[in-house]
Length: 261
Image (cartoon, rainbow, N blue to C red; front, side):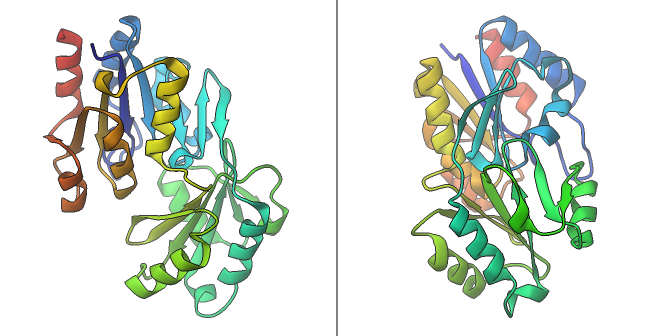
C-alpha cells in the first residue's frame, strides 16, 4: 500500500516564471496526509525559500533540500551532511582564478538559507527572479555554519571540459553533479536526493514498494531507484525519462489515483 510520495519541485510543482503551487495540488497533499500518506518535496533550493510555497501543509511535509544535503521535518533538522570547510575554501580560491573568475559565481547554502557575496548582483537578481531571498556577505569565506551545498553558476554554461575539470578536482572528497547547462553543484560525500530518500524511508520505516517518486531534472534521476512507482515528467530531458519506469503528464492525476487506491 502506497504510504510515501516524493516529488521534485522545479519543473514539477512549480514551472518557470510561476512561483506558486496550485491550490488543487495543495488540497490533494492535505488529503493524502490525512490518510497517513507522507509527502516529501525534493529540491535543490534551501528550506527557507521552499517552505512558504506549501501553504496550509507546510508544517506537515518532509523537506529534502539542497539536493539532499539537508532534510527537515516539523521545522527540525533530521539530517544534514556538510561539505568539508577546506573544500569550501578551495572552491572559492579556485573560482577566483582564470578562467573561472569572469564566468562562474558561487552560492553557498546552509541548513536553511542561501548566501552570496554582496558584489554578486547578477546572481542576486537571478535568485530574486526565482523567488529566493539570499543573504549577502562581504566574503563567502566568512559564512557561519555548516555549508551543505555549493552552487556554481556559469554565465556561458558548462562545456564538457570545464565540468570534467571541476568534477576531477573535487569528486574524491565530495559529490559533484550538474543541475542544468548553467548550474553545477557540490554536496557532501555520497549526498544525492536518492540517498536522502533512503534515509527518510529508514527513519519512518517505509519501503521502496510503498513509495511513489516524481522527477524532472538530472539531479532527480537518483531518486527513481528508491521508489517502485517512479515517474519522469513528460517535458523532462530524454536522459531523465529513460531513467524512469513511467512518464507523467500531470502530478495531480497520479495523486488522485493514489487516493483512490
